Length: 187
Image 1 (cartoon, rainbow, N blue to C red):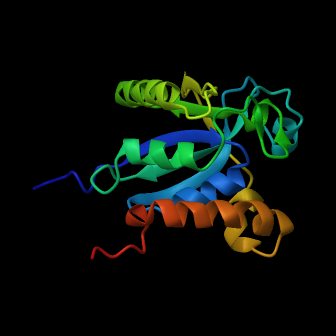
Image 2: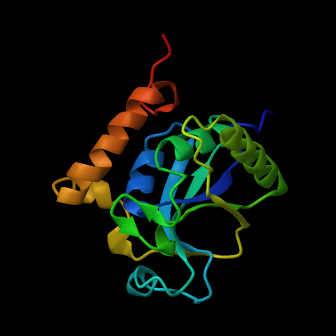
Image 3: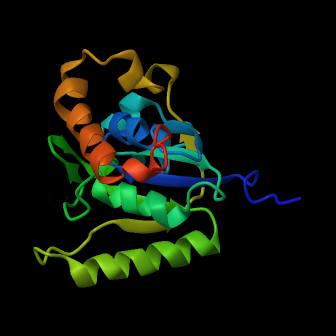
């Protein structure tokens, strides 16, 4: 029996506001769940308000559960880097602070190696010459965000932030990565 389609792995990325990142990765085939949360800081069981203050060391992140038999980690990295600006330090648009930093928290040695290779490739090919500032760290602990952050985009599509920031990101990903979407049908 081939277990490649039943194997499940987790990836943890921080690319600014977790509402955006969650909505993007929920669209991808092979992704079974996306949880917003916090990682990389010193506070145990941080709250949104603590992380928002920028003094916990935590970043807003998403924990992606996926099947490598349906989508590869490299595909997740590709979408991650295409859906935020990895060359701005501690900032994504109007979201400013270390809690919005670009960061990959690897959960396996394979993820670490793939992310290192990917980061090196990006830095060598950067069109504008801007270095990639994405941090690469081992995941020590993931803390799930409060319930009201989960499925935020789906629950609040009329929110101005959702309309002005998240919708354009989703449209970009849908256009650039149609073959990776859950709704994609092979030709």
